[in-house]
Length: 103
Image (cartoon, rainbow, N blue to C red):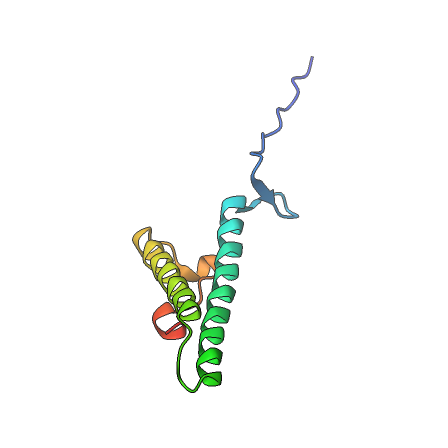
């Protein structure tokens, strides 16, 4: 009697490419997507804050400025956490420099 080959069990959160090799973990995809969304929101908050200043002759709207600053803080924290965990920023699509792009 032939023994059946036991198929390798696949974790629920693994994604496989066409060749059957493990491609990316769902957690990494989540992180990449979250970074992209936060980056877009941060840049939009900065634009909105600057647009409001232009309409009001240089006077800012505290709410829009606060929102832009909050995104700056979040993105800066993410940048330093990537550094602390020795994760290459480009490997998770973190292609923004908060100190240059959001101030």
